[in-house]
Image 1 (tube, rainbow, N blue to C red):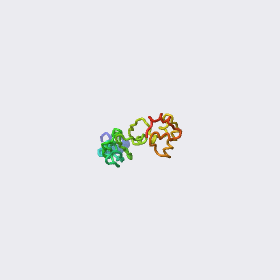
Image 2 (image 1 turned 120 degrees about the horizontal axis):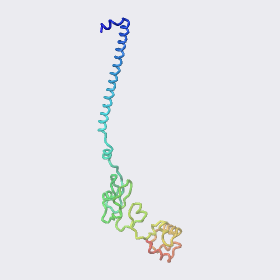
Image 3 (image 1 turned 45 degrees about the vertical axis):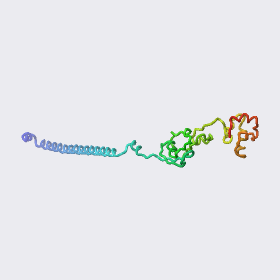
Image 4 (image 1 turned 135 degrees about the vertical axis):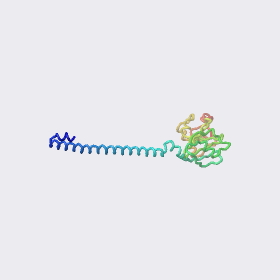
Length: 216
């Protein structure tokens, strides 16, 4: 190489030396940049891998939604059981339990008519459960309030019927229905069906039409 340089003019040797020096300098800089980039890329890769590992560990410790539902304690509800039971009173049950559970806690009597209660219904907080006795007559309005199946002979109780029910009787319009209700309020309940003739506008002829459709 020295023999080759010896054949090159001194000025050209200087320029060549400068060029080689510049190439070496910039080459070193470029090499350092590449090395630093490799280090950064490796560091980023390690960081991502570490975050993924932590995420997996954290995920393992979390409870899945299904497990949370399984571990959630059921809410409690309170119901009032009355009627033909041994121990009427307020009972605390878990949400989702049935009327049958509440009635069993209160102990139904032998005379209780459980066929008139839908024992499969879920209990509702703050509700009253009425257990009727066999043959017990319950007004339709009261029965609806308890959610009972009201067995009826088709007759309207003139001591309990509302204006709409009285109006449905033959010959009894809105005006007479109101008079019947006013009579009850002023004089008390009718003692027998014939007492309905004490209401102004209702005579023996109308009584004959009503006697098979009313009761007290």
